Image (cartoon, rainbow, N blue to C red):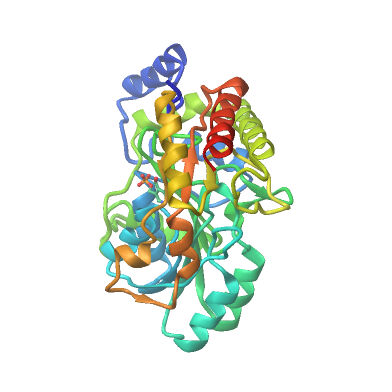
Length: 362
Ligand SMILES: Cc1ncc(COP(=O)(O)O)c(C=O)c1O
């Protein structure tokens, strides 16, 4: 069986050593020593400042928006549901603007058009979908023109760089998910990287019930802290993450080279480094899609239609500025297996089945 995704497994000897530190200190949560170590190591590894660990990637989006005073936002319709549901749960007035048909990411031109029609939004929330960075320069131009805050949902973009600069350093804040299915994980968990220290400080208070440094109560907050046991998992996995990302990126490149001209592929940001988070393909014809999924299944290979439905359709009560590209891509995008436990021969097996299916049947 080639599964779609397989979480990284922490080495038990190393993990036990890290967990023992927690038991010995008796400090299980509330920004403890492992939390501090993991924060520092992630900041160094990723090349960022003002990184705040949180308990998951959904709360990361909510807290980032809260810290930045975003009460209304334009967002992408093509993402995992949490990108939108977190905004709605936060009571944020949310509208959708279309994606670029090539990159699958929020389209700056469509965003400009949307904001020229209705400028009543505090912020823009865009996803670097599948780890492929948005046109961050294009979005910055539009955001500056209309004076909007920008939050990037970078749940898929762990360790992705544009011209050697972390993708997390664009926008006012970027959010990460450290869910077990992600490239790097803490079982459940996440982080927010803020551009400004003042926003980081505010968010740090917000995730600790709104308690201020002097112990007095400020703006009401929530509990979104990452505990020490989960930080122990993160510290254990971080030791080997470079090799993991290299391996996943090699598998991703092999897939893309082999499938070029056989299926449609998202156009990847030319200056971006890879992290091999997902392997999306697009097949427009429904019968061809079904044949590929069935052939893979018959060979014990998992695949998944992902992301579907287009979120403007799922949340049709929200305003949409027209999301035809997203609706089209949501109808034909399939993610193929990609994870650290796969080998190049697994990838070639998947590729050959797809090649044969599309050759034999059509
Ligand atoms: C794009 C995106 N945003 C947000 C999330 C939510 O992250 P979490 O599961 O850590 O809450 C995910 C999780 O899969 C995601 O893929």
